[in-house]
Length: 217
Image 1 (cartoon, one colour):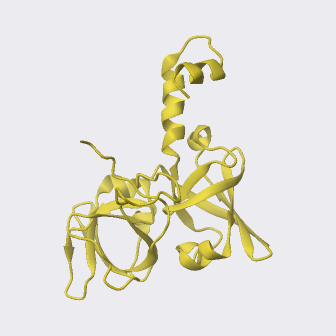
Image 2 (cartoon, one colour):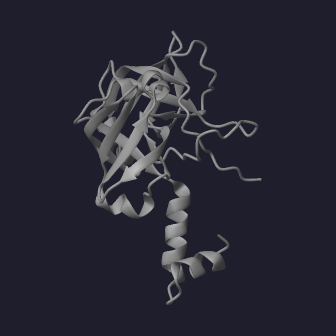
Image 3 (cartoon, one colour):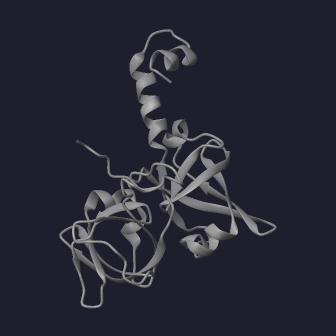
């Protein structure tokens, strides 16, 4: 039986990058988890700021080592990573676990850039600029993963999304360390991608509603 590896977008803990080593167009990352006795095995998958990577070995102090290849570096913020940086960590979802966020695959679509923050009471309305070619996968009140965090889009523009960050999200994730001008990893809702492709491939002169009904939605 085949099971899809996935995450929920609910960050378990923050880690710290303890070392970075470049090797043959790839980068080896040494990460220290912020959670004692982080229960993951060699070969296990961990989303690091929303990027699915494999645990390759452990250090004497429990440090985890991962390799990010050139394709990953091109599509994510790991191309400018440095020791001391905080990262969001989430282990792959267990089959008996609860899906409290949304389905996140750990496959980053693009890099976005924070363009503004508006403080409203204890929350922050954060606006992020995203590439235009992601616009068809983004909808107001839809789901999106930003640095691996499952978030709801409060507002969407032509090439921007605005997120309402509650205190718990700010305190427990790297959203507390980000500022205007910083870059973040963006992963669109996988269902939006599949729906878009099925509608595009179906062709014809049907209306959008008719196409979706015919395809079982």
